[in-house]
Each structure stands twice: as structure tokens, then as C-alpha cells.
Amino acid sequence: MPVKKRYPVPPDYVVAEEAELLPISEVAKKARLLEDEWEPYGRYMAKVDYAKVLKRLKDKPNGKIITVTAMTPTPLGEGKTVTAFGLGQALVQKKLNVINTFREPSKGPVFGIKGSACGGGYSLALPMANISLMFTGDIPAVEAAHNLCAAAIDASILHGKEPGDVHRNPLNIDPMNITWPYCVDCNARALRDVIIGLGGIANGYPRLAHYDITVATETAAILALTTGLKDLRERLRRVVVAYTYDGKPVTAHDLGADGAMTALLVDAIKPNLVQSTEGHPMFCHGFPFANVAHGNNSILADLVALKLADYMVTENGFGVECGYIKFCEVVCREARWAGYNIWPDCCVIVASIRALKQHGGAFHLRPGMLYSKVKEAADTENLPALEKGCENLARNIEIARMTGVPVVVAINRFTTDTDREVELVRKKALEAGAIGAAVSEAWAKGGEGAMELADAVLKALKTPRKPQALYEDDTPTKEKIELFATKIFLADGVEYTPEAQDKLKLFEKLDFRADGHRLTVNMAKTHLSLAHDLNMLNVPRNYKLPIRDIRASVGAGFYYPLCGVFPTMPGLPTKPAFLAVDVDPETGKIKGLIS
Image 1 (cartoon, rainbow, N blue to C red):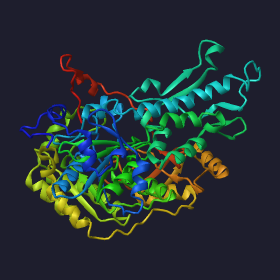
Image 2 (cartoon, helix red, strand yellow):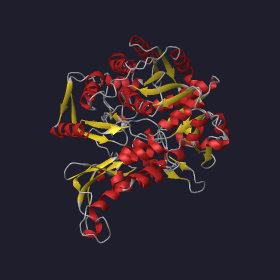
Image 3 (tube, helix red, strand yellow):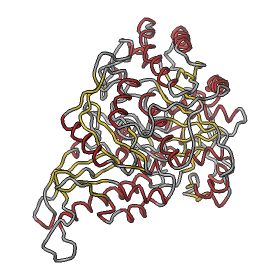
Image 4 (cartoon, helix red, strand yellow):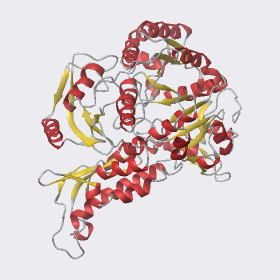
């Protein structure tokens, strides 16, 4: 085993430093990859040739899909990733053939608040520092491709069709109707709205531009949703980046940028092979945000894992109504359009007693707020608040069961949780319809701490799934939005701003298609509430869902209505995580990273 446990559990970066990693060749053998199906990226990481694997194993039945999602979290997260990794480790300890799949960390959260999303304690993804920072260059490749297209827009406005042509802007692009932002992969609130093109005509025409964090861009979503190089090329061809003065869409193909964008992403669409603290294989690939984009790792990582393993454990970003529903309604739907029939076999919902107390009114931890201000309330036994907060867990169980999948609740136990609190949550989870409810102590014990959870999941997998989508492919977009609002978010209806109403009419007229299908819908909202407002805790009711805008990610294959107000470029907090990060100049080892 790469890591020898010691107690108390040291910081994540120390666990990662002390790990004796397996050579990536050994991890590849565990994953049942042939030698010509992977390319080493240093000693401990590799790129996987998805095309060769899928061709070799095209007739092999898929493994089981175990999704790990969460109740509505606090800003700190409730341990979804560490639970997913611990579950994978536990299943491996039971001598089962397992691969975990998960998203690549963005440097926004890594250096902001949440950390690297590489799990934690003794259920970590390794090599943690590499994964958390530049990794295999996938995010920089997406950033380069996306910004190339953004630069091409401004160049097209400046130049004529040929050098010396005095008739500029041959595509007739309206500078006030450019929908493709620039991007950078860090939290930089000052770049949300910027004036570019200052300093004279040599620098282009001045206009208001916007920056998104890279992982919230359409290019990032495309990388995670593509099923191969041909599909990638087609998606980039059809992305809509702006509109003309007379309201016609302008695409990356119109700019002539789609071919170069594809070239930049040829290697980036290959899944990345890494390992856990117990040496079992994991695919870390794709990085779309779960509140703005669809919040799941790449389809290609999933497709390859499902052929190589008997059990694939994957994590869905944030809560059930965010990442899990988007896995069903975006990932599985678009995979089906490409000819791959996938659907979860079991949904694991991670709950923490801390988050349940928040939903029960014991405290309210807001983004950027110091945890010390609520620590006493979070750590003190409070059964009435806990029982009230279990309404949120029950609602998340109900949403997951709507998809026709058996549900297991994983109680991510913290050191301050009492036995009475744990048993109350277990009781309420079973009353709400979960097939099983188990304690997970993966952070402290690795796979050993998730054995009870593994047993509960294996039992749940004996219950056949009955896939149930929220809507049909040809359901009108407005009806899809209203189904999300009323069936998932429990709103009484939808309130559209005039801008959103105009967008609905425009998109109905343009009738964008992906693989011949109407675009699906990917609701963009806060992850800190089942509604649109982070202050609406527990199970909000008696409200209407506000839609302030609707945007089209035609290449990614979805519309994303913006519910309420939240930025697509985050900002740094008062005390960002990067303050603790440094390098030992003697050893070159990175310290201070949190996960």
C-alpha cells in the first residue's frame, strides 16, 4: 500500500508526501490496460488511449455505475470526494474490480477556499500536488483553445477579408452581442467585466468584454462531453460565439478557428490515469463547474472505466439537484445521443451532521465566512436542529429516487459527531426511502473506514434500476425549465426577466440542434440551496424561480438558464488558500495544499 497510516491524521499534503506511489505501469496493469493503450506522463501519471480501449472491449458489457453525490452542502463541502474514493478503496479491499472517476481540480478552488478536490486524509488521489496544479496540461489546453477563439472574434472585427481591405468586420459581428468570453483559471473578480481594445486602432476596437474562470467555459464543458475526436471537431465547429447586427449566429467555424481549437485539444481529451492512497486505479479527467456547467468528469473517462472495471465509482458535483441530476439529464442523455446507453445503478448521497445542523437552523456558514464563527454550534450536539435539517436530506433522497435508482446515504462522520446524532440521521434516511444508510470514516481510515458503506452499496445494487428521465428529448425548452423548477426545485413556477423572455423567443426561432436533437437544459444556480438563493436553506417552498438570462452552449449541447444572481468568475476570499502554499527549496516538494 502506498501510504502507511499514522494518527492523528496529518495534513493532506503530508499524507501525499509520505506516500510510496506505485509506478504508473503497475497501476495500468491493475486497470487492465494493455501496454499500447496508455502513454506515461512522468512516473506516476499517464494518458489513456480511449479509442484503442473502446475498440478492444466494444463487445464487453459495461460495469455498474455508482454515483456519489451529496445533500445540499455548506461552503466547505461535506466530504463527497473523500467518500467516493474511500468507497472505491473499500470495494477493492473486497477483491472487486473497481475504477474511480473524478474531475480535475481547478486552480480557482485550489487557491481559493475549498482546496484541490483530491479527497482527503487516507482517501486521497495521488500524486496530489501534480493533480492540483498543472497536471497533464488539460486545463491550460482548454484555456488556450478558448482564448484563441475569443482573440479571433476581435481580430475579425478589426480586419477585412484580405490584408489591406478597408471594409472591416466582414462577418458583421455586433460587438455588443458577443457571447464568448475570455478566460483564466483562477479566481479574479476584477476581470468579470473589462474594457479591451484601448490604445488606438492597432489594439483593436474598444468594447466591454468578460472573463469566466476556465472551468466554467463552454470549451471545458465540450471536453467533458465529447465522445471522441470526430465528435469534438463537430462540437467546436458549431459553437455560437456572437451574433451579427441582424441577429444571425456567428460560429467558431465562421471565424475559421474550429480546426486550430481541435488541434489544441487532441491530447487533452485523453483520460488521465492516477492512483489512490491504496494504489487502486483512478481516472481524473474533465473539470466543468457544477453550478454553471454540468459538474461531472468526462464521458470518455466513464466509458473507458465501464469497459475496464466491473464497478465504476464517480462523483457528481455539489448536491443531488446539481451534479447528480445533470449527470442524468446532460451526461447520460448526450452519451445516448452518441450511441452509449449509460445510467446510474446506485446513487450514494453523502450527508454530514454539520450540514444537517445548518439546514436545521443551528447556524449559517456563508461563503468567505470564518468557520471559527460557527464552530461551536457545528460541533455541539443539537438533536432538534439535526432532525429539522434531515428534511433537506429526505428531499435529496426523493429527487434521486425520481430517476429510478436505489439510494444509499453515506454519513461522513466527523470526530465531533456523537453516536446519538449518527443514529438519528441513519433512522431519518431510511424513513425517507434510502435502501441503506452507513457511516463512512474514509478520511481517517481509508478503505477500511468505508467497508460498511461498501456493503450497503453492494446490497443496493441488487435492486434493478428503472431509468426515468425528467423530460423527453423533444420537450420544448420552456417546458424543460419549468419541469426543473417545479419537480426538482419545488418552486411554484418561473419568473422570467424581459431579457430571458427575449432569449427564449430567439432560441425558439433559431432552433439550435446537437446531433439532430433539441438542446438539453443545464440549470445554472447556487449549490448552497435547493432553490436559487443561498439564504433559502433546508427545503424552500412557496416561491417562484427567477430566470434572469438564458444562454446557449450549442457545442456542449445545452441551454443554461441563470437562476438568480451569481458570477461565472469567482473571487478570492480575505484569506485565500494560496497563503499556505509554498515549496521546500531543498527538496522541491510542495507544501500547504489542502484537499
